[in-house]
Length: 213
Image 1 (tube, rainbow, N blue to C red):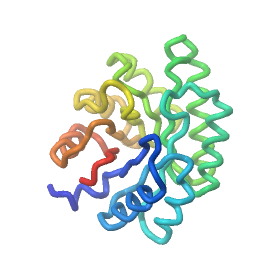
Image 2: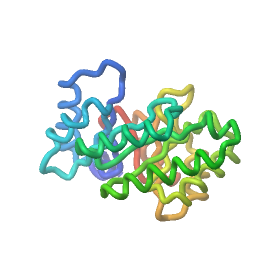
Image 3: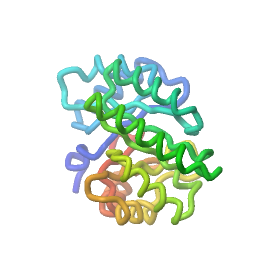
Image 4: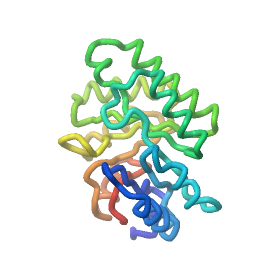
């Protein structure tokens, strides 16, 4: 298990505040050279990433409702639609934990369905970020089930901006709960090849990292 065989799992990510255009260009070149699955960039740089990866297998991902997820659904839809029109083919959307913790199941589930439908109407994929550091195991189970029922493509552990990122036991739990049709993306604090393979063995089908593994 080497870096070359790891490449198809990698979402090479740069979401740091203040990142520069030339950093996005370098990110894309590295992703192309190493054969990564995707680059994940801020919405502002989707057009740049699309231009840099044109004609290559590298997919362009961006974030929606990032990093806290408390945008209104209508705002998330607008943000997602703009990103799709600019060339993004994967959307990493932060779930609205404020609504979830307030007991607003209907709102959360309707938002998941709305964004999944929007992505799929544009032949794109939706990844839903749970921010598992803020959740109990039972809450992770509940939200994974809602995501699966909405037809999302991946459920993702973390934004990378919380106190903790991906944890092996949480990824195992997510994989147990989710059907095979829904992928698991581990992200947040994964910086070595060994860590990445450990998460893949735990059930992750994508690895989000800002380190060129």
